[in-house]
Image 1 (cartoon, rainbow, N blue to C red):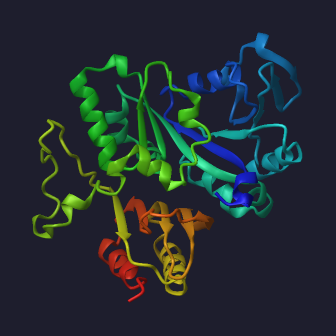
Image 2: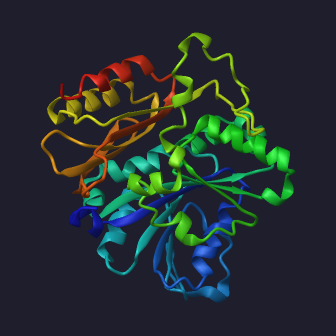
Length: 346
């Protein structure tokens, strides 16, 4: 990560359907002795039911916990709260923003691209979605927000796995993968996941994604060899007994090349793509190897908003590959592939 990026406070956006266990996770952050100071921004304190014994001081909007965390509510404007927190910069290690159970995480995530002061001081680290293993399949059928939350996630905490059978668990995981093959998935009971697995992930340091999920890029390659069979193969079996779902509505697309990209072609192409198709693109991210550039360029996007910077030098012996991922609805796949190919230095 570049110096500037390293100085920015990492922000985790925590989302999840009502009752999935988000509150349990928040309570752990606010009460565990993790030795970190987190600022937690929640919608309503009532929802969390903070244990009074843990509170040191509270004014109307801010609670201070005895493990060093501070907690405040979003009344109105997230940007205003972030600005207030930035004035206390250095007092905490990371910020966690909880979205309401029914909300689409996009507007919250976008805050970290839009406001200049916020962007100077904070970076979107990861979107973490808590999902209920027992009810998720039903929610995906009847609640578009639930699908957005899965599509949006960098990390998915699949909770309450003790309440479902092995078969049901495999089924719900296959559905999740049909929407988002790229998120890191943790199976939990009572949200017992190591906080390090959900906070300060550096989710856009794709190195980490690739370390953890070697199938990050291969996830959709096997479907592109024979276009002629269309999308009628919803449940083809990959030999390991798991059904392979294609979500009717959501797609993901990954692109890669080991040839250098021309930044003067790529940047305008990407900008234009998200301007025109941003409504359909929920998330985009990538690592780019530009022509005559010794530094890796990393970007991430939410709908029309993009942020990116040179992250670090390519290491010796490290393959200089460019990799991009798009997740969204009705993605213009062919156009994206052709556009990307036109950015390769011939």
